[in-house]
Image 1 (cartoon, rainbow, N blue to C red):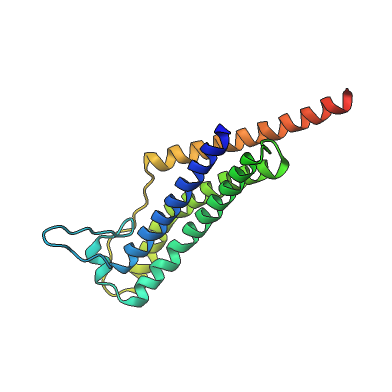
Image 2 (cartoon, rainbow, N blue to C red):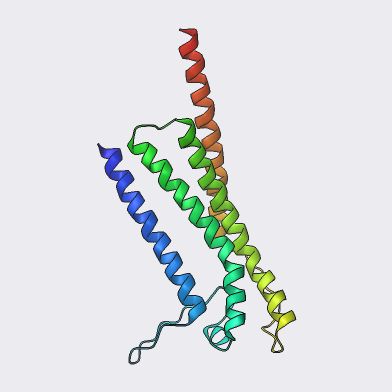
Length: 178
């Protein structure tokens, strides 16, 4: 019973996280947040200022969206697979083959989304500087400690899925032996 409650809570947080990611992605490229009095909230894509985005033509913004969308889509796929894994947990299918596959796909998709997110900055800089008359500055590429930690955790998840798969195989061998 406790695991079902925990899984429901994590699934709710997971989809809330996805909604926030999507919300920020849309707002970053639309510059649609007006100021209220002396309070102004400005959201911009990583590596670009709010002013740079607001000065872009619509076609340039669409290019930015197209470059950032693969990372968001891969992350969405990973979160969906995590949701499927949690549903299997709720059904007490902890070491089922598809549960392990969902976990592995989540780890891989999250890792790929991070790598794509890291690569989008230099690619966007190169394309914007080649296509635009007004330069957006030098090409930058950065990796944050959070991204490195997340890559490490995803690698650890791969190790855990391998251990889960091996445990399942050993359990089947033991059942056949007895």
